[in-house]
Length: 158
Image (tube, rainbow, N blue to C red; front, side, top):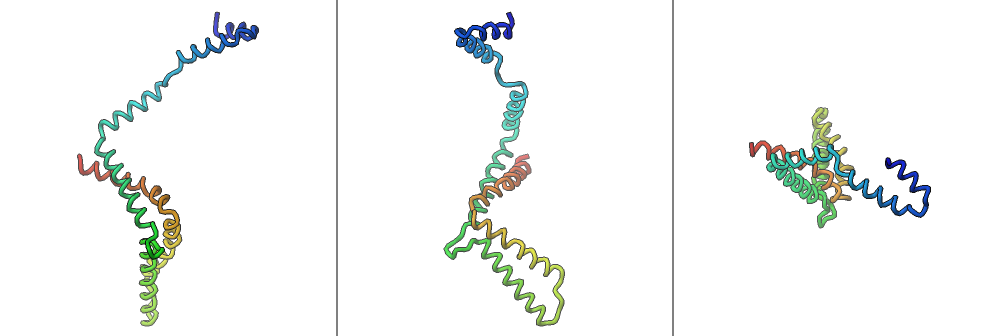
């Protein structure tokens, strides 16, 4: 008797529904299990962990360091502004002073001068956003720190 025939017979008999459920539960438990693909991925992951402990440690340290530094730079201080915001304000002030000096001398601003000014103005809204959400900023930068830490560890521990 095949599984399908048994199922049909048991469905015809309403009183044997529990037995049918138990039979198929046992049958599915016997046949269910991790597939070969899952076993393969798990095996390769464990093999990578065994073969590359320095790179993994470097990635963890780099990730933690980048997140901590970004959090510290984005977190508003006692003045209400973060270090990044104070740095951008100082860069804007320096750019404005240099522009005023160039204008007083009658010189045309160079491409580099204008590019630095545009970059500073472009970074200001980003820095303000990072200051509003220092924790999320730290999480966003953590993968970059992990990559750098892994590359450094790979280079140092060859």
